[in-house]
Image (cartoon, rainbow, N blue to C red; front, side, top):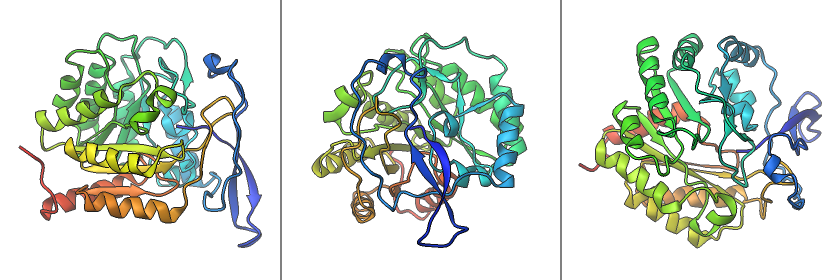
Length: 338
């Protein structure tokens, strides 16, 4: 996850009216008090292939209005997703439940860290009403980590899923969850609420966990995804990673094998972008052709769906990708294990 401030700049290679979004490091430190005293990390100049349009369409504004009316948080805003202009122009907002403050402090993430507020009991219904008002065919629901809660927020996730089923019964539901580390029986609660897609991101290769994701455990996350399939083989499972953090190609390929051994259906791979100088540095910008290579290899390894581009994020084009993944299963490209 990463934060951008945006300015409009003219792309002279195209035309004077082809405005692009220039990314500027967010210099605020109030979101991450634990990082204030960390040394600044180097910042690489961004390549030309990382370009998106600045937000501002009428539909973008309407989506923002609906989110505000219901008092909701979105990971699109909190993590500063570069695709917000495109997605919100299609009313595809990714809801972030259980507040805007995370109990962990991953080196890559720009979501606020600290002590969260108590859960809002009205949030499941608010999310459901916003989903219905947006008219979504497919919605992605994610959350901050809530290590302060006995169940890690599992019951709240389940309540949100059930509320969406009531308010928007035709909408398919994808969830992107924390790892529920040291939260016994929490995972079962979420699985039994029957989301259509269960996503939990590995984020990076195991060799970088202590540096990039110190509060998490690689093999716990891998086992979590496997347990979803064991308990309900019909649920699609999904995971994603960032590249450009210093991982080696062989490590990425091994991670693919690990995910396939857990019967994960969908893999996303995107470029890590540095939120501030206090966050983990970008070691390398991976070129588009390398992403295409990862995509080909991942399909060859048996994933039903693969999204691998510099701007790929967990919920980017999630609705269209879900439709393709469901069609691939129906066509017999791969089948859930029983």
